[in-house]
Image (cartoon, rainbow over all chains, first blue to last red):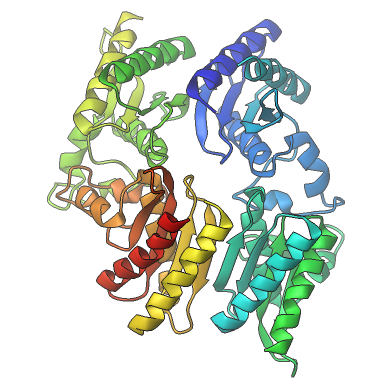
Length: 133
Length: 133
Length: 133
Length: 133
């Protein structure tokens, strides 16, 4: 995950959030879950700083969107308490795995601050920049 | 738990994982839940590093396989929130208690990275090395 | 600290780092030490992610540049162990207090990854964007 | 850092420790400071488990041997408190950067449990396996 790609993704995410009239935090991490870029929009509640980071971290560590992770780490899922590993993970949508057009794993993005479906939508718009790069 | 036994168990676990064509992390701890040996196979997602360690830790701390622990530390179990003690424990399979042929407690092994049934199968293969020692 | 200003400061910092041919992390926090923007340049060692954040945090929490903080929080300083409060602070340069042209406190910036004097120089260039806003 | 290389390095380190008649822990991490292999020899004090891991982590995060790091993070060094970042780092020898023959960065090894010069010597012997791979 190069910084130039991460900044393009951030720009796209912020533009989409403004279009939807919501205030979010955006976190982008590399394949080892180390942060590359982060931004908090004016008006986003402070609690979503960490949520956006945990969404990205969850997606990177398990190479799985955080919404899919939710079905595993749930009390009735196949791996209850999985969400308590790795310093605490996030079992709801808004963390997406970033892949190149050839399918190779590049990192993950986490968006938080709006409704979960909007968080996911914003992350998906950002993802197009990864594919284009 | 001597290092020589732990390394034999690790070798057996890695061989079985290769045979099953899966990429896992293997953690072996002593009776005091202190790490003896750890290895991460190429391609294992990074999130399972901690999961394998927590599975071994759970099994050692309660001298109970993590799959059995799951029935206790669950919202519907007899000791809900037990899984939140000790820095976080793991309520699903893949953590096994290691015993000598005379039944004495030697430590625990945690395997993570494949499907839970494969994680358990790999740990069981490794266990035979403990018995043989 | 509005996101628009923080992004302008980030752009200026990255441009100056490229001009100096160094790879750094840049963290910008608000008056409450909450993160607004973060970026890691390609090639920056991973250890400086946290260093840049702690430099910004130190400057914001004490409204004092981290280089000035160093003379206090040092075994021979007037407040030895001050550096161990607040989850750990940073007693060397590269964390600068951000002020508006009227002197009001806006937040702080932390730069890490180059020699300390270059880290400081990069943060100072970014600071001009705050003044201009 | 592939597991096969890390296991070769571990074997070499354990053999050298036995030759020196000391009991150590050996940690090998990848370029992002994630663990690849760990082993604790019989008789090594439990406190050195974490020391060996922090030595490897320090070397990987700053791409600098932990002995060199010591001169920076010292109260009289250019970056006092640097050792308090990243969850605590290690400012003495025994953590070495692993490089391929072409100079590319592969990860780091940390050895702890013997005298510091022996820890370093053991890590250096292990390093030859990285070069040979």
